[in-house]
Length: 235
Image (cartoon, rainbow, N blue to C red; front, side, top):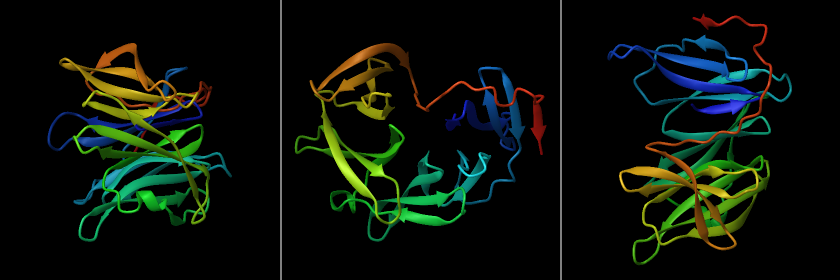
């Protein structure tokens, strides 16, 4: 499951379980149990990342592919923001953009304190771009700085550091944010993981009773899109 817009969830997987299995993209409305499946073109020999977004001008849902070393992406105001790493002497974080209306590429200017950082993720916080920057203190304990770009725009982007997440636990990861802006944490508990909510005011984490081995988060709103479509596969 990669993303969700206007009540449609985008999934990407394999049709079959052999080494020659074909990839299959699925646009699914879980509210009405309708879907459209799309067989993407054959995968090239280099890395390819497939994503999903909505053009704000036409309201069309678009499936896109980015080749190279692109990482996770978020779509804000019709602009795809993709976290990528570029290697000079070492790998450094960059945020590449793609406008779904003009179909033009750009880049978000990171704040000075994040220039050259080697470990960061991007996410969405209240319809704004968030950067989750990973650090370690002198004792090797992790902490995260949360930065938000309140105003979308390239190259004049403005980032604000909201808070720093620190906790005694050595094994945790920020996977997203609730509607109220609180981070959702994936933390190791015995042989599995638990989802917890972090409170920036008290610096405490509270479990929400969800356990598993691998988690992801997307925003979801119910809709009736695909209501008049029959389930189908588009080649």
